[in-house]
Length: 533
Ligand code: GLN
Image (tube, rainbow, N blue to C red; front, side, top):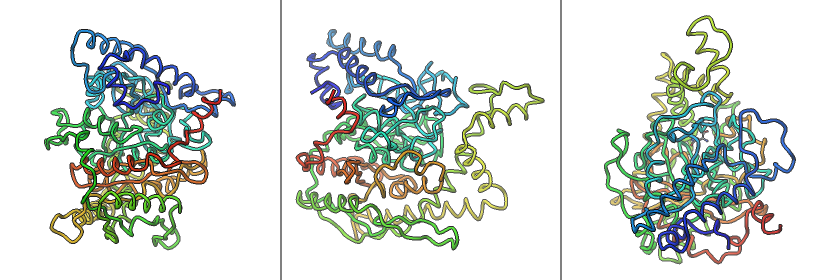
């Protein structure tokens, strides 16, 4: 087995015990990146060699020097008998939406192509302090706007390591692809409507969106500030728990970060699921897609293999002693996407005002008439079309005369979505759930260019994930099988506020009980080729 297949827990244990040096781990990780990643995404991609079609393209920028210095520091601490941290020597990639002092941070947008932030995001800083090795910045949809990573201004966009003709999902597609391709053990992503969980499902890895406020947003470029959550991406549930351990907690630099104490997520995995109440909802068995002629919500089935995986997971958990509670009503979930369209666009338009070409980032090279002209041209040239669409929509929806009809109303529906979950989790109520079990997505990964350009269809790939963002609740996607084309299926556990321990426990119990299932032995295509070589 290669070093790159080790879990983060195993790497950290071996490095701490001195069996492996952080330097060796780093070399193996870099070798894997060089073998499978191909050319990095860039703003001026010329024609692509056909062989590159089979590469992953997760990275925009490697930070080799930084990683070498970090590895040296970990190895120095080990030999000096100092504590190197819980992620000692673990290779990590960072979604390029988090600041890293002195290293270009682009949000995959032309408008920030040369921005070198003067400070490091809190979750990144915490990873560094825990002994992780930061290998580089990975690609994403521009400003995290998308579900396929194809809206990135940095091309080539990442591919799905399971089948490189397919997208890895988005917006944390570079993150999940880098973990699935065993380039790194962990990645730091963000989830506003599903951007950690949807690509985790598409790439067959674990993706956790913590409770809103559990992980600091300081240094995360804001998309929709009331929904954004940084979170871990890993290959195993225990690795996700370990990473959460490192990044969770109060941050005086983020006023929305929570003061609720963190728990020992790794320790609680062992508690099992006996007696845990796991809910299944009829409101998560279909996709509610709008009919643009009538304005009504039409119903579409979700991929059969995905519904079967959810039911199989429920029976596995039942065998382990969990109580399955069927028919839990979450009726407002079907309005989650329309609500998200309004809330996220209004907040995005507001957050993107700061990019004007005056203080940092891209500035139009043409001669301008005045400041207005400079700002207008800079934004016209700097933002991609999805960002522009969102700015226009956000401005419209929040403008005087329309806000009451759209924005205010969306906030009310958002409260109703939250109330559905309050009822389901109420310890004195009818359902008394510990977790809700749902599909993560309605389909497995789609082909490149199949959905890109249809912004509504693209948005609907978050139908199963976005309610947890509206409600602020923690949710995790774990691998739940493969479809007939060998594309990964994700199943999702949603839990009550700050009960990451519960959803991780459910995911871990399911994972451990199904380790011997045949699909777990199948490797992503990019890794099969590597073995064949
Ligand atoms: N796919 C969603 C969108 O396009 C979610 C993005 C996210 O979670 N950052 O907005």
